[in-house]
Image (cartoon, rainbow, N blue to C red):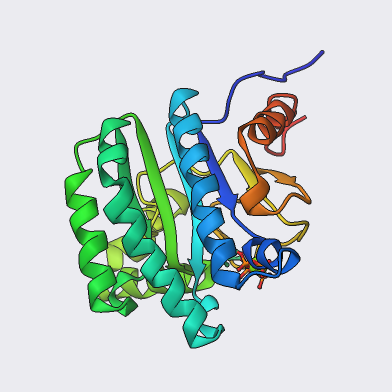
Amino acid sequence: MSNISGAYPVHVAIIMDGNGRWAKKRFMPRIAGHKAGVESLRKIIEETGDLGIKYLTVYAFSTENWNRPKDEVNGLMNLLVNYIDNELNNLNKNGVRLNILGDMSALPTKVREKVEMALVETNKNTKLTLNIALNYGGRDEIIRAVKSIYNQGDSELIDNLDEDIFSRFLYTANIPDPDFVIRTSGEVRISNFLLWQLAYSEMYFTETLWPDFGVSEYHKALDSFKNRKRRFGKI
Ligand code: IPE
Ligand code: IPE
Ligand code: MG
């Protein structure tokens, strides 16, 4: 007896890793790898929408990525601004609603304003929700939720606190947990991504570097998901 659903995930999350190594292999600067990574992202977003998957979350910049050289951090911020400038029309055309997971207040003003504009401009789209984890850390998110609950000053809230209520104080409030997580580049770790939300997610690791991750490999990963037997602690 099998309880394999054969269905696509509702929510896919991706740790887009390996841009730097992709560039290094080609004797190019790391930022060239990040640029190539944006191209991969563009294709994966389009395919995700076409497949009818409702949520895509991509890890773009962690709370720890600030510890990279200043040039690389600035380069990544500029890439994000360019991405929005170049892609906003396409996102709207494809029904993609943009959402940010992470602390936007720490972003450079120019970047924050651009992102806020894109959030407003794509707000009415319903085909696919694209969550960009930006200045995101799973531990940071949990601490913020705890503080935010405490700051309500509502003892009833504390008394009734359960997993559902707690989830409403996370960046992912009202978003179902990822069913499937893909990490590229051969690293087999979580790197502070969605620590709470990944409790029962299916994981997929591939050696492919993110700029080389294309639609056919995406399908291969999704086929693997379709054959998973999810038990959620039951038998
Ligand atoms: C992932 O690629 C993108 C970000 C973390 C912003 P990396 O930049 O981590 O690439 P590698 O891991 O050094 O190859
Ligand atoms: C995770 O990749 C963060 C993103 C993909 C944005 P890292 O390259 O920062 O992770 P570690 O340092 O290898 O764990
Ligand atoms: Mg990396």
